[in-house]
Length: 451
Image (cartoon, rainbow, N blue to C red; front, side):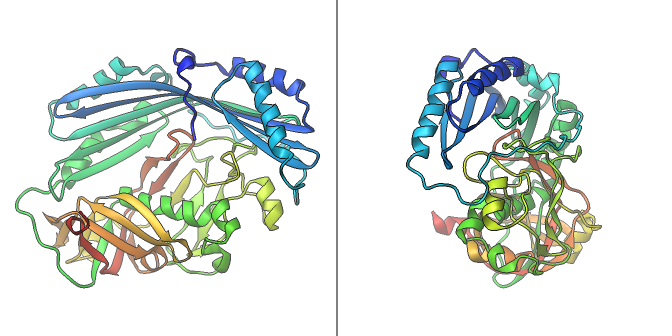
C-alpha cells in the first residue's frame, strides 16, 4: 500500500538524499538488525475521452522498516522521510516485535553479496520529465480519433539498505498505454508497456485496438461448449491472477495454493512455460527484490509442471525451499516479471483452430473464488464470433467462469507474438504473454444477467 503524504507534493528526493538519510538512521538504530526499503514515486496519467484530454500528476512515498530485536521481528510503514520520523518508525517496529514470538528459521536479515545484473535502459529521461502538458502533446495526434487512450507513467527511486551490509538502489521509469475503440459489444482494446517512450509505440497500440473493433449488427451467444481465443492482453489477466493466488508466498504458506499438492506435477498443457525473469531487457527488468537480493531467472511452470512458489529468504527458510528473490515488502513475495513463453502459431492460425468459437479481447474484474482449483470469474469484453478463420460479429460482454487448471490444460495453440502489460505497482515489472486458443469452454453467460 502506497502512503501519500500531501506535505511532500513538491518534493521528489534523489537517490543520494535517500541514501544519506537511511545511513544516518541505520547508524543509530537500537535494534539488533534493521532494514529500510524506500520507494519514492512520481506518477502521472493522461487520458483522451470524447476528444478531450485530461491529465494529473501525483507523488507518493512508501518507506517500510523491518527490525529483528531479541530474535523477534517487527515492522512499520510510513510516508514521512525526515530523519526524526524514520527513527520513530524504527521504535514502532521494535515495539511491535515485542508482541511477537521469537523467530523460527532464518534468524537474520538477508545479506546477499551477489552482484546485481547489469541492466541498461532502466531510466528514460523522457518519461522522467513528463508532466501533464508534455503528456497531452504526446497523445494529441489521436485526440480527434474515436475511442479512448490512457497513458500512465512512473519515475521511481528505490533503495534497500540494512545493517548487515545490503546497499541496493536504482532509478527506474515505466510507462503504459491502453487504447479502447467503441463502447458497444465487440469493442476493440489493446495495451502495451515499456521502460522508455520510444519503445512504447502508442500508435501501434491504437491501431491494434481499431483492428479488433467490431462493426455491424450484434450477434447472439450460442449455447454449449465452444473454443475460445484469448488475446495476449486477456491471457496476461489470467497469468496475473494465477500468479497472485497460486505462486505468491502467502498463498503457498497458508495452504490455499494448489501448488501445495502439485509441485513438480504436470497439471497444465506442456506448452505452458511460465518464467519470472527480471533480467530480460525485452520486458520491464529490475536488478533486485525488496530485500536487496539480486534478481535471476526462475522457472515457475516448466512444461506444464509448477516448479516453485515465489519466496523471500525468510519464507524459504521456514518452508525448507529455495529462496527465489521475490520479496515485495511486508510478509509476502511475488513474481513481478512474468513471461509466458510464446509458441509458433500466428493469430490467423489460432483463429482457424478455434473455428466457430469466441474471441475475447480483454478481461476485467478477474477474481479467484476457489484458489485450490484456481477457479476464476471474469468479465469478458471485446467478444467476437470466429467465422471462417476471421473475427466476425461482436457479441455481448460475458461472465466467464472456469478453472485455470482445466483451461490451461486444453490448449489448441499458443500465439507467437507476445504483448507486455505493466504490473499493478506500475514500475517494478510487467507481464509478457501471447494469445492462447483453448478448447471446449462453455461456462459463459451474458454480463447483463448479473446486473
